Length: 209
Ligand SMILES: N[C@@H](CCC(=O)N[C@@H](CS)C(=O)NCC(=O)O)C(=O)O
Image (cartoon, rainbow, N blue to C red):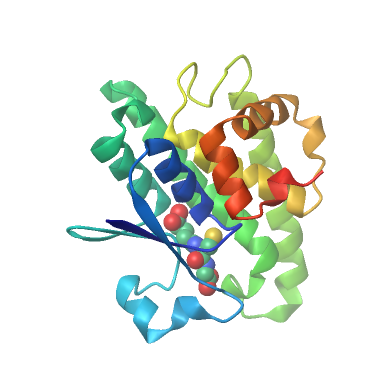
């Protein structure tokens, strides 16, 4: 049985959606950041980096959304990743950018201390993170122009990953409605039963008015 360590509303929602869409049987293990459970000795045995998501599989533990999503699709739901090498490379490329740029830009807003010990620059880091994150969301909006799903006509695990940033933009009060393609796509995402189940389970801000 697969086991997903996750925390509602954070980036592990991407893996949660991928698993739910795949139809694979899995169990959920919530980790409370409020109680610092990501840093307990028990959890550090699962992921020594103290981060979620982590997926326990028969052979061990997989961390990083990109790897988890590629694994879940490859093992249980091949239709959730492109079949041909060039398209698969594009899917991985987009998830790598989510992980190495979009997500860290957002982290600057909430956790500036991770990027500079000098508290005098924290406000500046927060403001820069917000600007950069907003620019990333505009880029995602552009990527969605004329497409049903983020890679084109086929829904993929990459869509679940792209959804979390829409919710984060909403959370920090960015003008998300101005991003017309992203907003229309978000509505298509919310109409998917598996996505809706996950968001309801996580009491996601994406379901709030
Ligand atoms: N690139 C990683 C990022 C993992 C990550 O940073 N997770 C955050 C939640 S979004 C976390 O566990 N934070 C706990 C902490 O910082 O203490 C991935 O995509 O899996």
